[in-house]
Length: 126
Image (cartoon, rainbow, N blue to C red; front, side, top):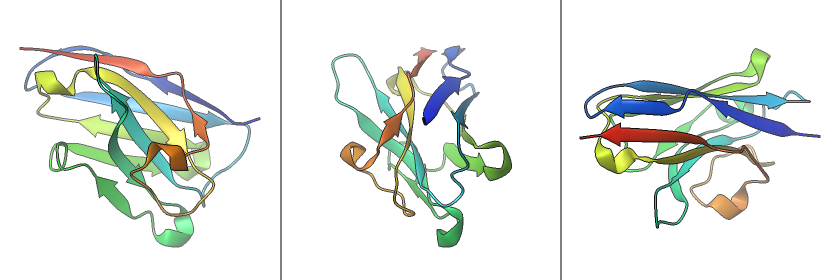
């Protein structure tokens, strides 16, 4: 079975940086899209970024709110997804989830993803 586990959440001051990881176990998914979503207190699940599979040249998409500050990447040999977060803001505070979809191309819609991690808390203090 496919399992995704996030690592790297924590508390950071505004302006700081944090790197999240997501390990996908069980299979190699080099040709499947991966994404990060987040859910803040009292909010719905929000798209953060996605990265396509190998056959789609690992094309990246970002939400406007994080573009220029966050970088999504993947290491297919280890089935690991990363989110490098810089210039963090209090509004970035949320539980961050990694997700995998069967399709090759990334999607901004959470329902397009088939597998999810348990989430990791990121808290940004003012």
